[in-house]
Length: 376
Image (tube, rainbow, N blue to C red; front, side):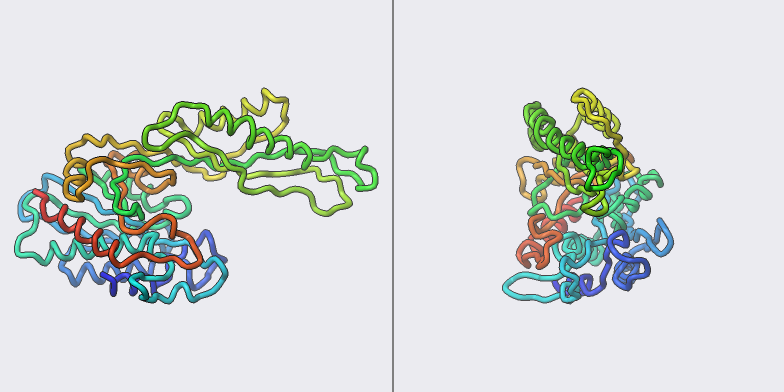
């Protein structure tokens, strides 16, 4: 699987949202086509789901010996973020010191390699599952708007368990936080910088908004009851932009915020909560959703039989939670109970020198294969 991972890294699949139009590194199509060719060689059924022009999910199916009574979904994403420093070296995979280095090694081409290898091994065995279909879905766009998982959910595909590939250090994750991105704007009145008394400074108004959000509102969130796996909700002001030049009183200022939600919270309720908080403190501002799609938290019952089966196969006694958002919650909204699982550590994701340990990759592949081999 190390060779497979290096081949996947050598096929750039940077999410187009992070690159200029027509950039040669953009898009998942090279990886999707390569995965499809491997699936065909392994004797699997191969299909594509067109999501947007030249961006498609790839689906591989290992059908059981008899009638399909159960279905397992393996669902890593194919897209990556871009280069941190603009260098192309990160798209050249290297193997050194027991690690595979390169963009996507950890997030999540390592998961793609582990899941495919396990699935291919089961397909090549003398006997395959008698009643369980295994579906591999290589998804596009997880790093931006999750267009791939949303499109797959709309097909109403049913599965007893979805295993969403993310670097969890081989922990079985049944809960992750949701995500609300919003833009807050304050307005003022432009004037000459020499006569600020004739204007209304929108940046100054926004400074108070930032102080309130990062101060009182964040403290209020910290006082709320903690979720047993996820902790509490959080908020971060990640961007601020206002004014055009020093000698003009700015008439507009904008911030962009990242509000992480926990089970029980909704995107609409969270936005109303922030608007109400700012109004209560006498702030005049407008709040606009940035994503245009919902990104809810995930909470899968760890006592579900299929989750328990997966825990047993991976040698884990209990499930964990993670603070990031991923495709699992989207697929769960479509009716598929999901866990998140994969080799690697999220601490290496999106870094300038991304890597995954060979030991984690090999162990993850073995655990996935063990689970698939035990399917009825």
